[in-house]
Image (cartoon, rainbow, N blue to C red):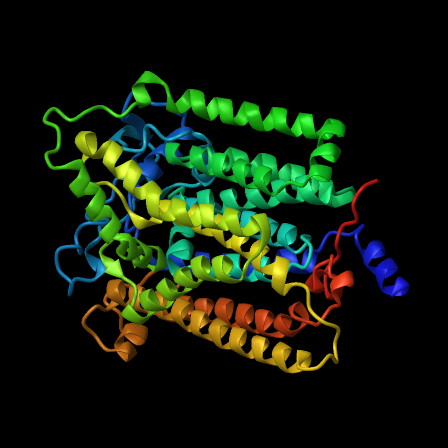
Length: 527
């Protein structure tokens, strides 16, 4: 036992590159496939986001109201609209993307969003033009999103008895998340940043890290706070939710240790500056929501009732509704992930223990109540604007809190060889492997059905691959192979890791994650 502990401590000085690179590579390859497979502007609000991103690197970060000057190549005939009215129309009706970098005026409905996301996403447009610039912005945004997800994975395996707190967040990376990640849209990076912010704050507050883990946690917290507040104003709530969750989970000894560390106050000061900038930006007079000339009619109680009744509809959207919200994922995919979402809420409440369970319950309540509150508050001014994707960040934070609640109970296992323990271990791994395969198939089906909708909507699968009406960059065969490789390698990697993750560990030795102890380093608390 002493030898095992010393080995873990020795490895804590090195960064877990295998875990970080594995998560990044698997997600990035899949998001890149989506970025190339989705026709330009076939993403919610992508034209407005693309204008702001490119304009930010061509001298207009703020703009004049909704007016921005951006390169001419962003104006594409038929993009995002020419095939929407006919289900049998492929994306071959889109006009060519010219390589004209002249600045012309555009109107962007994303003018009230913070410029932080656009300064990041628009970087490729500073040295590329035409189609390479547009696809470059998509892929670069996907890369940053994947970096945040990989950082979250590194942080979560540092937590004590990390099993379910690792698996549940992975389960909420739905096809919708991957689709949005491979686009010019702040939704996916907002989700990843919210999870990374919560994970980094938990490690800093509860684990009192030192060495590389301390610096990594601080850097992740700062970068995540910048990105989670760097898009939509609603995301300010995710910072509040993360802060409340961490405070609720702190023990008395955690508070004492935090108050004594000078680094605590430095990190809090930096995070406060980031949040104050975002608050200033969103409360500027020109960014306020202006009331409609004629207020939208209807009973607000009726609006609230309608929103409550649509709860599962929004969850199905979170599973996958692609294009400009007009290309739903296959029925089985939406049903499968709706079941995952229900399990995500129910299991921590039924099986979890301690304050972690009540934090998970709070996130579950937010999933139900927050959409109603926001839609009712905005109904008279803007009407029906709510979409399921707006709550993806809350699903991820719920998964983290729910995983902590389950690990508090299920993480304390008997020693290997105890009566029934080996059988329970094998059955748990078998069930999780079955779920893993189902989720992988659902991801692939979502990708293929969506690509087929744009490439050959009325043709056979054979014609879709070999004789498509619309050929995306990389070809239908090439992108299909890319998605297969990404999902295949990721599935095999997780499949092989599950037995190690659920390896029986005596309760007294269950502080480090079993996965971290077996494969990756863990940190040791500072004195």
